[in-house]
Length: 164
Length: 137
Image 1: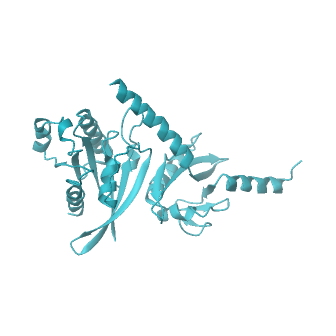
Image 2: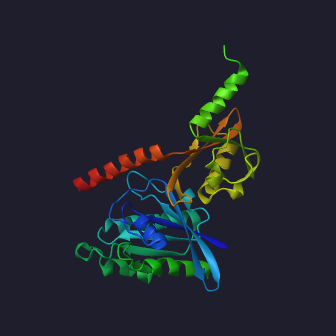
Image 3: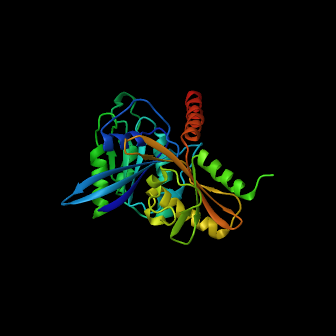
């Protein structure tokens, strides 16, 4: 069976672990636990008549306490950059990480996920901020690990591009 | 005075009681255990403990072994740590591991350990730090 390594990248507390939990186990918890190190999860997905094993590397959030090691990206087929729609500074972190990935492993398929779309009253990221990224060809998906919005779409569309 | 043989036995007993796996790199592709292999080792590095193929290691450890090999080749002092990684066991429980690479008298050594307590401690420190910063914002 084909295996594809997918890295989850983003600032701390944007919901990377929750997105994986939603996608792999269909669960969500409001309780926040900082991820230290890397959590490995696996999910087998069907692509056409073939099965693909996704190896999900949920990498600790980038902040002043922890900086993502680029050696973790070795062998990745794609990645999901996650930002929190209620905290615009997490988009800046995502952009920094995108640059670091590009410098260390080159161009890989990726999606930018703007997570926590269920928190509409706290939403702070305007479409105007995202538009220049869309113009560069970035695929941006609004997600909610809580409701499941956009989660399947994010993983499936990335998988399709990785396999194309 | 303790005899060399009993020193060796004592050392192996120590490694066992610390729940560590101690391995040496035998060539570019293989490792072998030099201490009794804990039962959990097969989860992250399956195979014959006398001849463990690096390619058979779990994804995270296989990735770290690339860096460890370069570290051993450079013969640098100190040790290279993998950082924590978490795998799910057959009962869907999270198991925390950490690996370290270093050289002892020019022999390339790999230590693999289960590290739930160290992980919990590190998580408490970082999470508390983040909560303090959030409150200050």
